[in-house]
Image (cartoon, rainbow, N blue to C red; front, side, top):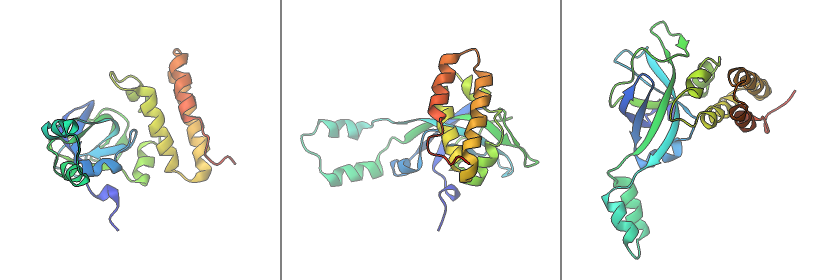
Length: 207
């Protein structure tokens, strides 16, 4: 069976070194979730990869939707047809948290160049997600990013990253992440408290 990370979930619309926006069909909505790690290529060399966190998934209207919401009755068939053939994509924003260089190493820093337009965007597999989140240097990129719900995004990512690890490692992973967050946010207790509450390990194995 083809794994979901073997097929694109979206395509790059616009990009910069700090992040990019991507568009997808409505049929991909079930594959998308706030805080997921995604990847795209900045060029033609498959060894180069840009990693980012998915956030701000939004579905804009289109002319047909505007007409349909004013109709007195809309059939299920019409709704299905509109969803399959809508002319406005599902859009999502991605903040860059790292990249894989030509030597195969993952670096938690802004990439040298952004993904190109129409580059396919893939979900990372569990093993690649573990590799990308092995260290916590990317916390600074997320927590300092303007216009991003930083604590919510980082927390969602950490909970997902913990779930990719063996059950007996999940608790320690979240505890270490919380310690690093406490170091970075020691001067902003409100943000730190919010983040720690969101990643509190309710449903992990404690040895």
